[in-house]
Amino acid sequence: MVEISFIIVNWNTRDILINCLNSIYKTVRDIDFEIFVVDNNSTDGSQAAVRKHFPEVTLIENRTNTGFAHANNQALKMMHGRFSVLLNSDTVLPDAAIKELLAFMKDSTETGVAGVQLVNEDGSRQNSIDNFPSIETEIFNKSLLRKLFLHKYPSKGVIYNNPIEVDSVIGACMMVRKEALDDVGFLDEDYFFFLEETDWCLRMRKRGWKVHHVPGVKVLHLAGHSKKKAPWQAEIEYYRSLYLFFRKNRNFSSTLTIRILKPVVVFINLVLNFCGNMITLFQNERLRNKLVKYQMLFLWHLLLCPDSMGIRKKP
Image (cartoon, rainbow, N blue to C red):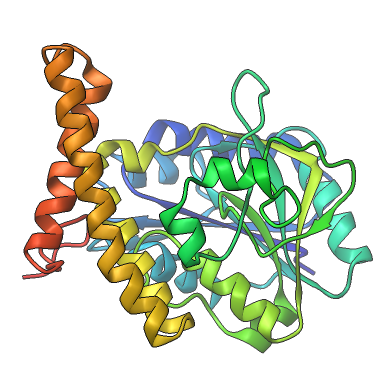
């Protein structure tokens, strides 16, 4: 019987995808598993590389970029495992990581979703937990909230020795129980990129399933390769998903408030970044990139958030 179904969604990340797949085969031992790679119309030869190096992998080739939620759902509907592991292509599994995560899920039968501690190449921790978006998290500085209210806003700034129950986990590496999937349903395909796993975790919790962060299981996360290929477009997709999350999960007044205040915050950041670029005579690349991001975000809001801008382009 298949124990774990690995699901990897890929969009133009051929080389790191191959590394990710290699890490599964090198580190997952004595566990029956299957692997699905869902390719969202990559143009970098990803599909050919998977077919050549990993012919046993089930490769799903989409003709367009269908988005993260839809692509995962394609494989979730085909999986045979008791558990699925949603894995970003920019992750690398260390020895025993999946074995330890699986052991936790088998012991904690009320847990529907479990996430890991994501780490950088130097071993430093990444934020692997997230709170459900609220007025506070989206208007105030998240780093400040995490410092002032440690229990309400857990973060990488606190070392956790044992698994903790959380709102949501970062979806770069998360294990999902098949029974919870059958109970709650698939990822919401209204989300194209960002917050689909957050919405899923919220739905899990509403149905009585727990969501856990398992800090003892560490997974290397190279972070944001797809986003780096289209930085301001990806930022627009985040805002689009954020507004969608509020519309689906918050009341009308909160949704209206966020739709009014977020563009104001974008405009303030645009002005501050323009001033910073003026002071540095536009010689700082990081500041220039930020300026472009806020320019495009502000323009997107001015144009009333058209679908034609972003990664998912609709006429």
